[in-house]
Structures are given as structure tokens and as C-alpha cells.
Length: 239
Image (cartoon, rainbow, N blue to C red):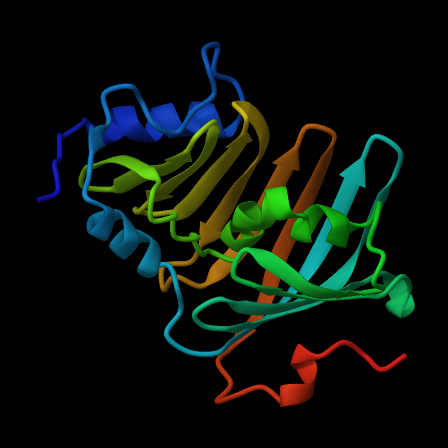
């Protein structure tokens, strides 16, 4: 049985807005101490609701910046539910083209193979894959032994998976401007957070990934639902 408690929606939205901007004076968390434990089946259902039912193709503009420089361009994401995504990005005139495929919680391949110090290194690193998926509006399910806690009210659901010292937190805000927010901690240390804005129909509008020393912004400008994708897109280019 799902345990619930009611919270004033205005209070909840304000709380999450403060957390999302990093302005909280206390510990940065999406889940308050009063969150109630829920059954694993309920939390898995919440995550499953974020998975699209068919193939999705998004085109986007991207901008990546860190302490040294910034770069930007255009890219695409091809999503095959439940857990496969091909990511392509390039700068002006196709400069610095990058590609990668993520299945579930790990990268199957990247092109170039050595993605160190690139936007792909940030996106497909093992610690960041939950954040990678939330940029595209999807929550990764927790493990079978994870501890799950959550709360809900009229316009929001917040839940977290805890595995030892690691925590993945999600918040889904419905209303005039739907949002999907996530935070990931490893060994208690906050490694990153995302905020994805959704249209009224659930399609992606924008996403922001914030890490301690870098930030990635995606602005989605085109969306389609093809019947399928060519099989070759799931393989890296031949050398």
C-alpha cells in the first residue's frame, strides 16, 4: 500500500524551486525528512511512467561550458524504449562531431572511443547515467535492494533510491510548466543535478545538467515519432 501525506502545493513548488536554483541554505535535497516509505512496486511504476511508449527523435541545440571554455552546436537523440538511446552532437559545420549509445545504466560505445574531456565524457560516465536519462525526461529504476522513499500531492511526486551511501532523487512537478528534476549523490557527495522542462503534452522543451565544474544546456526544437530506426545507427561508424 502506498503511504501518502498531503502538502500544500504552493509550499512544495516553492521548496523545489529553491532547491533547483541551488539557493537552499540547508542540505541540498529533493526529498524532505518527512517523506514516507513506499513499496518498491509503486516507485517502479512512477519511473516506468516516464518511459515513452514508442520511438522518439529529438533535435536540439546544445551549449557546454566548464572552467576553461565553452562550446555549442546542434545534436540529436534517438530513443528506443525502454532503455536505448543514441546521442549525436557537433559544433558549427559538423566540427568536433561526437556520438554514443547508452543502454540502461552504461554506455555501449562512444565515437571517438576516447571521449575524455568532452561533453560525452560527462554524459556517459558511469556516475552520470541517471542524470543523462533525466535530461531526456526518463527516470532509471532503482535496484532490487535499494531503499525507496517518496511523497506526493496534487501537483508533484518526489522519490529517491538509496543504495548504501549513494542516492538518486527525482521530482516530477505537474502544472502550467511541467518539470522533471533529479539529483545524484555518490558516497554522500552531490555530483550533479538536472532540470528538464516539459510541454503540456509531455514532450521535451529544454534540459540543464549542472555539475560542480561544468554545465550542459539542451534546447529541443524538433520532435518526431518514427516507426523505427535503421539498425546501423546502433553501431559505431566503421574505422
